[in-house]
Each structure stands twice: as structure tokens, then as C-alpha cells.
Length: 404
Ligand SMILES: *Cc1c(COP(=O)(O)O)cnc(C)c1O
Image 1 (cartoon, helix red, strand yellow):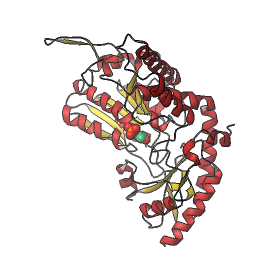
Image 2 (cartoon, helix red, strand yellow; image 1 turned 90 degrees about the horizontal axis):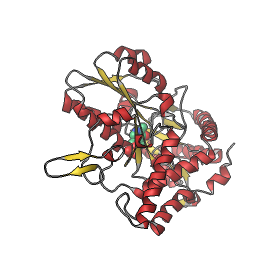
Image 3 (spheres, helix red, strand yellow; image 1 turned 60 degrees about the horizontal axis):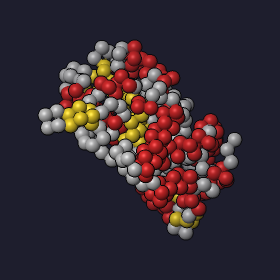
């Protein structure tokens, strides 16, 4: 079991006050906080071996290159990718998805179909709409039910010989639903379609095994896994990454350049044009080390306790409605209270030092489904506590009194 008081000491930000009150940070689904171990990796890089990678013969450049490539190996191991060049460094989930969507421009034609789910983040809807506009392919949507589960029979009905791609998030950021991606992947593969899974919300809570899943592409952002912003990864099966054309042209992604013709570098460099976020990549590796040392089974078990406790306490509040009650969900609770606007509650909670997210959570189609403008979302990580949930409930009750 995990020692939360010991863990909390690793996070300097958890010691600060906001508006004169101890910070209670429940906006983890938007970005997680950073432990000292990761901050140290960042400081160490800029203090001791900041240099451009891959091109230098000098020692600093080689140290930086080694550390960066070491981080790629850590990511490979973490996700159990078969080969390290199947891990592409990107600036985050959004970049990774756009890279794949752009690559498929040359592989799709009019009449082809792409399936997304009703539970997607905007970053997993808009790039596909743009891809459809470019290629004449059409977008189909797996509908959801009132609990926030995808309706799998409808998914199967959508699959046909024109389906080329299926895109689904592993866990919904707005509702916390854990989608049955094994099943979704198996059905898509049975008709020859490729599958991209958006792991932005799953990677903080579980450890995906891309080979066991047999997934074609898997993407995530470091900043939701205790790492820094501006860095993330794309896992792609080698055969798929070889099929996709480069996304951006520039330095580092070429083999040879002349004005007549350029030949591209092999994987992973083909997709890594320009100077990357070197320090970010190294810190991403440090963040995975940190979380693996705690252990993802311990993390999941503890966060489930927080979810159950928080859900039970919130349900005691009159007029409070929780959106997203899937059986399989993570520590994300989206709710509204009567007709009070989420923004008003969020503002009062902030005055009491409590950070929650209010709004549509970049998932407007879900809000449209429930016919609401948005929700209040409290999302927990392994460094949160039941005592914080108690303080949050007390503050929430005060806010409701003030607003009704
Ligand atoms: C946060 C999030 C994204 C976008 O991630 P960025 O780091 O902003 O690129 C995409 N999908 C889901 C499910 C998310 O939670």
C-alpha cells in the first residue's frame, strides 16, 4: 500500500497556500503536479549538460543525447513496445494525434470511413474532421448511454469493409469511463481497420501494454503523468510508422538533402524534425521512474478508494447529480448541483483554496448529450487524501448555501 504522507512531501506545490488556505488540488485530469525528483532532473539538465543532441561530437552533446535516448528506452519499457524506434517523441497527445491524422491523408480516399467515439476530447475529434475534409472520408460516431458507457452493439453495426480507422480514448477525461479497448481493437482488426488509442487519461492511472493490446497507435502527454508540459509520445507499430509519410520537414529527420531530392531518415527520426524538447523528454523518463517506483497497482488501488469515498460523500448532497456512472471508471467525478452554474461554484471553491475544473472539459459532444453547458469536475491523483475530500465537501456545501 502507498504511504500518501511520504509521497506528499515529494510535491513542493502541495505545501503552498492559495487565497490564504492550504491548496487542495483536484484538477489532475487537466494536468498533474510535479514531484521534486522530476524537478531535479530538469534542473540537472540545464545546470550540467544542456546541449543540442545527435549532432555534436563534443561531450555535452553526447551526454544530452545519451540521456534523451535513455528516456526513450524507459518509455519503450514502460509501454512494452517491441522496439525503441516505435516510440516517437512529440509535444503531447494533440501533436501525436495530428501526426497520425496528417499521415493518413495519403492513405485514405473518398468512401472510406473513420470511427470515433462520443466520449472523445476535442483533440480527438477535430483532427479527424480535418482529415475527412482533405480526403473525402466520412466520420462515424459510436454513441454513448446515460451512464457514460459506449454502446458496443452500435459500434459493431458501424464496422464495415470501408472502415479504415478507429479512434477512441482509453479513459474519458470528462467522465472517467474506462473504455473496453481490447474489445474495440479486436473487432476493428477483424475487418482490417487500424486503431489509435488516446491514452492521455489512462497513463496516470494504469500501465498499458501496447503489445498485449495489439494496438496500432497509442498516445499520451507527460504533463498528466507527473512530467512537464510540452512533451509526450506516439507509439506506433513499426509497419504503420513506415507507411506514414513524415509530418514536418526540417533538420534531424533527413538522411540526405539536395535541391533535387531529399531522402528521409529512418524511425524514429523521420518524425522528429528540428530540435526536440530535450529536457522535457528526459524529465518524462524521470516521471515514469517516479510513478513506477510507487507502482501502478498501488496507485490504482488507492485512487479507487478516493473515488469510492468521494462519490459516496458527494451523493449525500441534496440536488447533486453525478455525470458518468460507468462501472469501470477512474478517479474523475463530474457533477452539477441543481441549476447552479458550475463556474459560480468553481469560483467560490477557489476562494477556499480548492482547484477544480468547470466547463465542458474539451468534450462538448458529451455535454450536449446530457443537455448541460458543463460540469464541475474533481479529479484525484495518488497524492490526494480523504481529508482533502472532506474539506472539499465542507467547502462545496458552503458554496451551495451561498448560491441558493
Ligand atoms: C488532456 C487530453 C488530451 C490533450 O492532451 P494535450 O496534452 O493537451 O495535448 C487529449 N485527450 C484526452 C483524453 C485528454 O485528457
